[in-house]
Length: 388
Ligand code: PMP
Ligand code: GLU
Image (cartoon, helix red, strand yellow):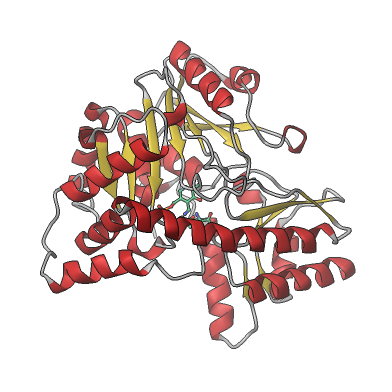
């Protein structure tokens, strides 16, 4: 089959790919503990799900406005204003899409193209690289290390900057490392981007999954930001709403309008009932905070259990993540992790190798699963690594 050069750079999502393999093996009757894709194995909070159901029952099922229903755009603007120190609180800056993935794609596609380089601190969620490449731009990895807890520094960015650098994509708390950037570091990064005319895209999808008692800092906690900042977030993780497919971008209105024009030619808009459910999830403040609080409590417990189990595995180095939903472990003997992840899958546990994240030699485990799945999965990891 001959495909167009448009998709020469296309790599399928490794995270979704592993999850699909785990599902297929389970369908064949194999016992698989799935710690692969970053998907909370919990139910969407009832108050949000009911809002989606009501929208269907009441016939609010027509084409929504391309950038999102007004209720949701307002709820997002208020949510950001309520949970960060310096949010613009302007629904006109918001585009709702089918997940952060589509919001990010739309913005990247509208801002970057051939000639442009986009910096991506690694280890990083694999889709950043492919999305940038699909836009025709060049993704440039900025490797960060275990020794600095995977927090990128201005010096590391400076080392990869060229006169073609037009963007920087950051993700704090990070998938896969759990690294959290302080407000000071975010300020430094924003100032550096401002000095060099670089767009800063801040993917904050894990911001509320923090185990320190306070939410992880947002780029909207930085008071003096350049105009060229786009915040991305959604309901997939904090509300266990991956399948509803709702994410958003908050950025300068010109960019948001252009990104929404692109959306008008691809998906038209995110699904209407899902938008009503997300408007409830983000807009009902008391219910929202109670749901996130309860979820974080479960995850925190899992995080401790998972950390405890992995710390006892001699073949691995692991740190307790402050945020997010992943345990990120280093293979002590420095061997590549892809064959290890394959072996683990054979041994009945699905996790992700570091390679697609730009970090061979590491393994990622999603701990947002039922406690029994986590404990049994990590017990299988321990047994496998003892013998392999
Ligand atoms: N950003 C990061 C860092 C992620 O891990 C994910 C995976 N869910 C996404 C964005 C995409 O999320 P969604 O499209 O479900 O909003
Ligand atoms: N983001 C999730 C992960 O890192 C899964 C789905 C996706 O890649 O969009 O596993």
